[in-house]
Length: 335
Image (cartoon, rainbow, N blue to C red; front, side, top):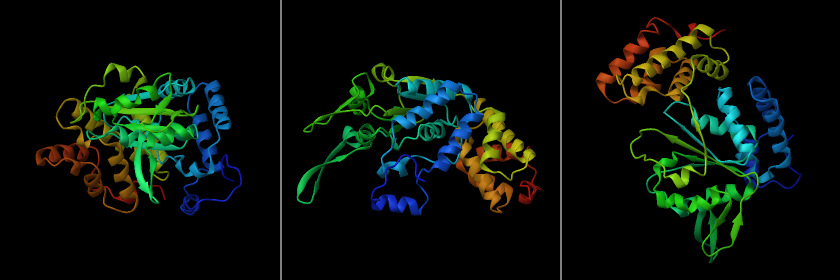
């Protein structure tokens, strides 16, 4: 049974989504509910999330946009902060260093609230038309082609503004009325639209990346800001075990220790942040699960992300201090 839909003829997009098993079903709803129950989130907030989903059903054409997270974010305090802010109608800005799980958490929030999601990756050449939309020529006439912000605003979606501090201030100025109490979008040459009451904006921002800059006060004031902490050892072990059900407890702990050792070296400026990559660690374990040799997999997922030979040696030594060269992939997973 599909989640929150009325029986009607499916579009081609929906048919494709069904075939690829991308549709958000009751099974996914229950999975997310079970996950939320495990977290130490205020019970009233959990009830309000369910009411939110019931009050704002998703149209059939947009069901494929509701994310089905591969990875879950663990962090009770951060969940409480974000859910409270979103239920209060706030947009949120997730601020933190690399490998704090900002994008994973943003996807988790969209899934928990059962909202269609639009991902918008910011860059220095981003302009207003890329966000709101632009005129295009179709069937012999000029028509408006909606951008991701416009689409999320109209349909009650969650728009993920990734690396928001990469864009120029003039490109972001178009969003001021969208993000504040006015909750509107004025499209030049077209009517003004009011945001759907379920629409929220979740922005992410890294520290110290090349090309990033400080956000101006006018923009920051339109968000509730959440500082994302570095993942704890216990939560990283949970993440690994949740992703790989057959991994042994000892292996999950050792991989978590490898990440934390690299994190400490990064904090001490012994290595760059290139090797500090949770995605890379999980990808490495996935390669091992398929039978690839342990250190070869770790090189592909972590070590080789640095192109400096000396730094690669430091990373390999850090990994080797935890993971023996003699260990085999079959030793890592339960049979």
